[in-house]
Length: 259
Ligand SMILES: [Zn+2]
Image (cartoon, rainbow, N blue to C red; front, side):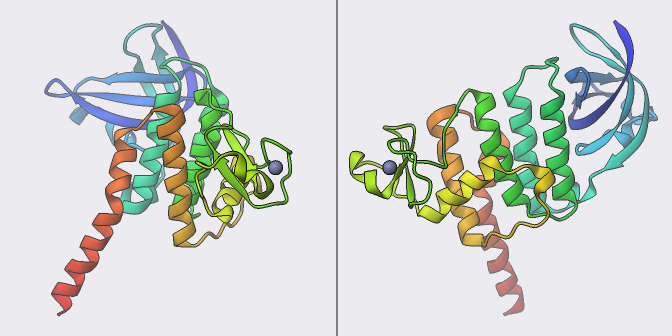
């Protein structure tokens, strides 16, 4: 048991027994930990512990079992992630993947930093669908999946239209498409953008613009990669896949009330 200071991001909260609360926080210095808040409605910390909140935590970290908070400061709630349905759905996916990809208690400040930076950009209004795709494609290697999405697996060319091939676990340029009749038949532009996303650094990213149609194709391809190579589908990912139907539903409702 030790008393420590660390930055952290609240991943989620869960009611526990009648009055208590469990809060999962991704701490910068001690990985993901579950914290126990006794008598949550009376705790001075509860208001600061909404999901998508970053702060400084003084905590008692236990090697096994639950940890405890002694103090919470410098709290910043990423409010756009809490209030906007679309942004919230994308942010929830990346939180769920960050939770999935490492075990609790594993020290991983690089992942913490990548996660918080991505969420902060979403909160600042950068396209949340694009940011989610960047996060997902760069997380693949942490799931043990290393795919070269920027050059032909046969000849190494990067300047010709590419397509993805399961047979080669990578890409084929136009000259080598014949080597896999069952290639994915992606639009070359989709794969080009995913390749860019794989290599981009968030600090270099100020403004991205991808039209809605391309964004959906990119998301579909990455979702397929996760099915094919990772086998992980979190609840947040399934929820997001159902979202387009919701959008149509909302539009129809609007049409009805106006008509
Ligand atoms: Zn080639």
